[in-house]
Amino acid sequence: MSKYLVFIVHVLLPSFFLLFYSSIASFSVFVLSLYILLIKPCFSFYKIGSVVYWFLVALFVGVPVFQISTNSIAYVDLPDFNSYSYLLWCVYVVLFLSVFSVLAFLFRPKYFQSVVPRDNQTVSFNAQSVRRICCVFSGLSLCFFLYFLYSFGGIGGLTDSYNQRLATSVTDYNPLAGAGVLQAFANLFPVFLGVYLVASTKSGQGGNRLIFILMITAILSFVVSGIFGSRQGVVFASFGVLWFWHFLIKPFSQKELGTLLLVGGMFMVVAMPLKFFGFDFELDLISEFNEARSMDVALGPLGFLIIRDFGRFDVNVLVINEYLANGFDLGYGQTILQGVLMAIPGGFFDGLFTTPTELKSTIFLGNYLHYGLDTTLLLGLPGEFFINFGFFGAIFFGLLFYFTFKMAERCIGGRSLKSSHVFLFVYLMPIVFLIFIFDSNVISYYLVRWVALFSVPVWYLCRKSEI
Image (cartoon, rainbow, N blue to C red):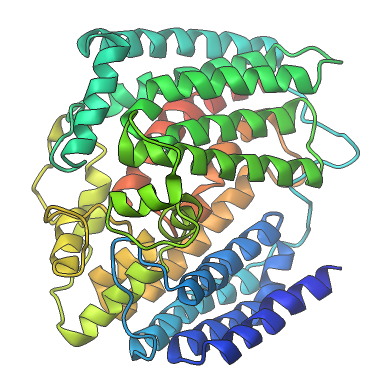
């Protein structure tokens, strides 16, 4: 079955796509599809290889096929489909995938173990120790959250703040500027509570308890972070709880994992109106959605989720097109360094280097359809490496891709997965995917909030209980 699926995805569908949409853009996607198929064996040596492989297929084949075939526009106009910028985008992607695949093959592991536990095997852990750790940290984070809640005048004040943010822009209105680490720690209260409830689960308790834990986690996550327009906080908190249940309580089957991914995608679509309309919107989503930001996206919120929240195809092609047509000054690592420093509280390093937003705004000026001059469009680290180093950025990103890939592998702990490693693995593994979607400043905030403030402390304290 898998062989037929691979043939359909890599050969049959791209061939029909090239036949019906004959252009340089469709030819570039077709070539890239065949190249990903060529390097597929390099992923077979790794525990998370299959997941990363299908992610690349969706990102570099699925998203471009959807956007080109529907001619959807989300904030920026695509260059002419016969522009050579599409071919150069294909070359750039092939370059960093080549760097990754060569390293992945040369340094492949000597053994293989699936990341999904088999035969209903779970990881043994000290439930009392985990509960104690999460209880203390959830209490501390709740105190910080109550402080922010009091500062904004309760839930109503937070709601007004969010609507005011939509009325201006993210860059012009940031009521939590300087809060940094304190805000991130306050937003961790739901996941600490969720893990505590998972660790308190007794044998025999099944799906109903998991649904209850997920509801509690999602609702609290929406209160502490979603109300500021950050659906990421809700998704990552729920994601963590699900994987902790998977490793520590009862493994999910492949069918259950597919269902959970579908439900997560549906949540993103349902939550999309809040990002554009605040708390005042009608249910005529597709037409209202496209009118809200002068877009023309097929399938409305679902199309926007594919193109803008997941894909980075159009913006990366546009960056290459602008570089060829008009040229722009490369950042030479400034935006990456400044993006990393932006997570440090207090703004000690503000203005030290060019920020990702400043350089992107210069590039997209005249093509950006949003009101205002500053853009919050995300290029993903592949695009950010390009605006810093040009085509040489492919080499650097290929090395980074391989490093994050191997780091996620090692978090599993070799031949046996320890409970302390679970807390590192759950939030380190997504970095392999997030570097394709987020810029350096967003990655930096993610590392501070989910890894430095949650994963590392819990991993360190749980590791002591295993000695």
